[in-house]
Each structure stands twice: as structure tokens, then as C-alpha cells.
Length: 252
Image (cartoon, rainbow, N blue to C red; front, top):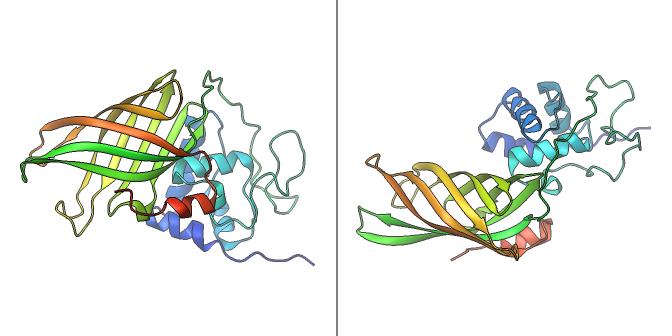
């Protein structure tokens, strides 16, 4: 007799928090697969089956896309098991834990070649400086962020307890040069009253792999373009729930 898994409320909560419908989420997963060179056939029905608990674990190709879209490790996305623990060895990346007649089959992915050797995955302290013209002074923004890596792509997402604002970064690695974009949703009760800011960032990774430093660029409240220093300092290589819980505290 088969056992029905409990609904995946964690994944549903994360999706809703991203203000995405199930269709939107599926399209984002498809786009993420194309970006990392692993196309997938994510659709609304698949998202529904994950959230209902009908599928206990996503295929590895979907697990990687889920991490890219959410910026969180698969172990935190509420699945009853994680890829690799209960999958058949079909030489093509495993199967979803569902019936053999599933219509959600995915073509064998063809990963794009990459020359990335350094791993940046783990917990980092993100720290940037900015000048507030309204207050006439300089300030620092600090967050603990979890960095996930898929080939030459990095995603960084702030831990919610590390700051009143939320921060995300989507980056590409080219040797020691790391380039991408950032988005910050400011504290609704703070000086900027929940305003959303975004811009670009370029960092240089030190040979030790323990620090990235560079500059950000972004717009101000008067639509002027500002810039300032930004650094990420390595803290822990683990992205386990226990590790993230330990760093889910104020970074100041």
C-alpha cells in the first residue's frame, strides 16, 4: 500500500512569498534550466504535484532549477526526501518518485561546458556602504547570505533574521571576476519605508576564495546613479538547515 506524503507547505509558502502563481513558478524553472544549460519541462501540473506531496522529491535537473529560482538549498524546500536518496539509476539523472507512467518525463539534460573550478557555495557575510543624501551621512548594509552555485552561476539570498531588509544577488563567474545584479527590499518600518532598490555589482574574488570585493552601482531617490564599495566575506561552506539556522541572526 502506497503512503501519501504530507503537502509541501514550505515550497508553497516560498512560491507565494515570491509573488508567483504556479504557472509563473513553472516558467521561472524553465528559464533557469536554460540559463544553466539544463533544459527542463516544468509546468503547472508538476508544481501542483510537488506542493500536494504527490511527488516526494524532484529529479536532480529540477532540484538544481529550484535552487536557482528560490536561491535556497533543496534541503530547505520542504520535500520529504532529496534527490539522490531514493532514485533509480537510469544513467540520466534519476526519476521523480511517482508512477512509472508519469507524463512529466524530461529529456536528458546537456550541461554547458564550464571552466569554473572554485566553489563559492556556503554562507557569506555581505557588507556594502552607501551615502544617504537625506541624512547627510554614510551607512553600511549587512546581511548573512546563502550562496548557491550551479556551474558559473551564483545566487545569493539573505537569511531573513540577519537584517530587516531582504537582499538577493544573481551573479556570473568568469575566472576571478564576478558580475551581476542585486535587489534589496528595504525595511517597511525603516527610513526608506519598504522601497525596492536594484542595480549592478562587480566583484573580484581573492585567490583564497574567502573574500570578494568590488563596487555596486544603483539609482537614488532622485534618479541619480550612485556607487559604493561591496564585499562578501566567507563564513561557512555548509548550507545545511542547522548551519543556516545558526547564521539566521543579526549580521550587525
